[in-house]
Image 1 (tube, rainbow, N blue to C red):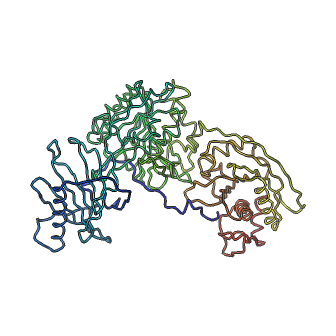
Image 2 (image 1 turned 90 degrees about the vertical axis):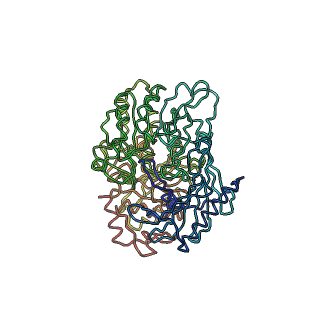
Image 3 (image 1 turned 180 degrees about the horizontal axis):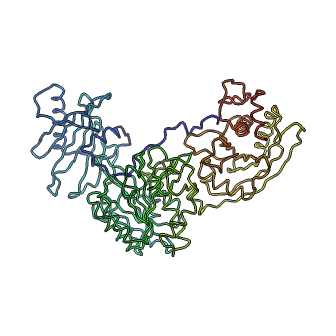
Amino acid sequence: MLNQTGAALRQKAKEFHLHRIVRCASPITWFLIFGLWYFQPTYAFTLSPEEHRVIAQAQTACQKILSDSELPKPEPILFRQQKVGERYQFQFEDRFAVRLDHVRPSGQQERFVAEISAPTTALRLAPVIFLGMDPTCALQQGRYLEYQGDIAVTLDIFSADFQSLRSEPLNPPLPILTGASATQSVLVALVDSGVNYQLPQIQLGLARDQFGNMLGYDFWDLDSQFFDSQAPGSPFFVQRHGTRTASILMEESPAARVVSYRYPRPDMTRMKALVTHADSLGVRIIGMPLGSRKESDWLAFEQAAKANPHILFVVSAGNNGVDIDSQPIYPASLDIDNMVVVTSADDFIRPAERTNWGKRSVDFSVPAESVQAIDFSGDFREVSGSSYAVSRVAALAANILSEDALLSAKELIERIKSFALPAGNQQYISTGYIPDPRAFTAEVSFKFVESTSEEMSAESDGVDVRILLLDERWNVEEVQLAISAAAKVLSTCKIAIQSRETFKMKSDAYLKDLSVGTAHTVLSAFHKLRPVDGTADAITLVFARDSRMHIQYEAEAFGEGNTRSRPWLKNSLWVALGARDLDVTIAHELFHILSNDGRHVADSNNLMSAETSGNNVELTDLQCQSARQYFG
């Protein structure tokens, strides 16, 4: 494996997943997690004189803490059972309640956080202003909630000089679109934090009635506005999750139309009404990328799921990094016949980092790491975790159902099983690994380009190679010249490339990159066209667009030793566009396969140096002996 690509050097997108329902005591948690530094162009924003005065009073109280002035007795602030600061309570301007936290986490800079509450127009005391201050009590950033009645409708984020950095809607009205969903659509419910239905690309995938009204419901606020928003710890720090899960489902199943639900966190017994509502719309698949450790939260759901055996429920295993057979997460750990539980797999078909597993409780694993999703903002970003495994398997189920709408939930599960391979690590899941849930609708074809053979000496061993160009930017002549130069390097060991067949692939764009799952779709289709035979297996040289592996290289080889859990990759060599020193890179990766050895050497002149220079082509006699063992 040579030279990590630029994509690998970018920090991997990390995120918090709606796999559990959490309760946090204050905005401290979100302040510590998210930070306060987010700069955007300014927008119109004003505070009332009264609000300015209470902010100044909060900063004065903060200064008194620094000067050890006489103050109300504080309460301790605990974070994961450890004291991280003190909390003070004040009353300002007769109607403002101020909670001022002096935060001093171990090993981190101290800071001050204030939450200011005031009566809303409905005369209910509600949080209005959040202040993040540095160790000197200087304002760094603030947040302001605008209300309509008791409902917060807008979150304004402002700078130290009270300029608006950005404004986020929290509960905007539903837009009315033109026309109903296509009659052949499969309705798939997604129970999450809602979706950003203001985004045109999300609107296209949402289910609608004949009047253009979006189908769905907010079972959290009990209204029709299922907008993507959840603030489990503080209303000032809003998490957006459902837009991402919905966008993946929409991308992978053109037949699906999403019925979006905001999950009923205030009262989980509403899950029964949610399932009933979905059933009344004709929903056959319900995706649930959420869960918690509290079984009692899910009793109403369990009853509703069992009462609707014609609906398939696709549930997340969760992202706690535990075996849920011994540490249950619900609803994944419930025994429901018409429910499948899914998790995310890494490049070695093991549970991905942070995700849960369970030999009894988890049915399928799928590649759901670094998946492209549409964020709440409308931008693309990479997301990871078992939540997105739910989207992928629900999309597969929708694609299957679009071909045969009469399938029962039990029959649908059996069809999903047909796409699963026996798990390479059977201790983690019960049924199997689905390498590419999109394979059901993928279009792949190959065009033969040319075939050549080489003369080789009697004392040489020859290997056959199949050349597969996945991206149209690869030039056949340049590839052939590089392979010829690589063959010259290997001739030192009396190893020859005796024949070459070259093909170009025409396919969906997502298949042009190297990933473990999509490689199964590509190579399975290719090997049906050109079966591997002979005593010495042919090697497939795949010239891809890019790598989407967790650790990305310009080129990567797969021999016998690193494909035990992913055998479809065996004897394949993948090169990404832009790979340097293409001839040396090909020779280097071929040598990994021939020698069945992934190690590198320190000698910078040796072919198996970890970094190519364009001239590192030397091989020792001992290395040659190792490579020739490939031929028996």
